[in-house]
Image (cartoon, rainbow over all chains, first blue to last red; front, top):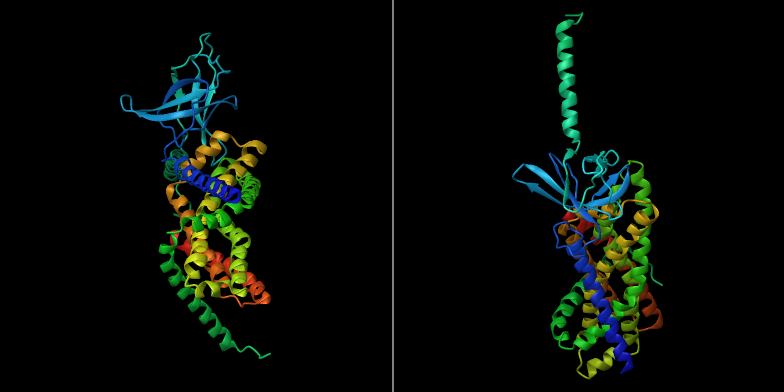
Length: 168
Length: 254
């Protein structure tokens, strides 16, 4: 009977592990799935951006390049038509001036987006639930390229009218 | 020894294909009554699945770690190390986990199935069962086939998860990719479709590998040499079949 017992325990363990793995793959991995997992320590601040690019929940929040927290949720604020980004800041970084400046930056050429905070000069610090007023949107590459080509086109146009080509 | 002519190869191949197909139908018919004896099925899930757990987990860990190293080195050249999670997760879910699990399964469990059933055949146990009006297809072949079929998707899922953590171990802990970026990029890129692809593949591989293993054992020549030959054929046929099916299924899913 001992043999039978280990067999059943082993099978049970295997099936349990297998289904736990399947559950993880189907619910935790796709972003659309249900999320479990506890709340991490820290305090939350919010910031409103005109355009967040492809900033995602879990993207890092940095100061001078050092990671101080992460983006905990992103919503669209339909009153001011801006993206409302909630960030969880690690508890040891509790002396961020209230008039700090938040901007969305890109990691590498094609990399993900992150929020960079540049400190302001006030003596009062951001608290849980506080918000960063000064923000700068994400740099969207396509808009930049469009601008570049637009300015390029207008430049070459004026160039063409000023100096006719010699073989004309 | 007679010289093998090409047409005997062709005919032999056709005959094997036909016999596997007929065997599959017979097996499927016996699968439903075989469920009436869950004890037999549990024993086979244990044999095929639980006893492959260690090798699957170890392989998954190392495959994931290699994926982390190689992926990091490659992605760093384009300055996009953050995509490591995506590369590892999609590579594992879609391709590596089902295929490597199936290959390991063929080597670890398939051979055991073939040699066990082959030895039953060689020692006339199967014939004895038939004489006692006990259908060996129902009580020997079907539970083993079903056990392999159930075990494979579960093993694949475990392989994927362990592999992903292996990649994370190398990428985040050793190479310094940001943990939040690793997971958020992964979650942004993976959807249920990718998980389904791996699941369908692992089911197909499970069916093919278990069928081949049981069939080879069941139709093994009842000699020591015959059993040895059947075991070898199981590994070769299962591996080739897995890779062939993998191409077909990938083409279907893309």
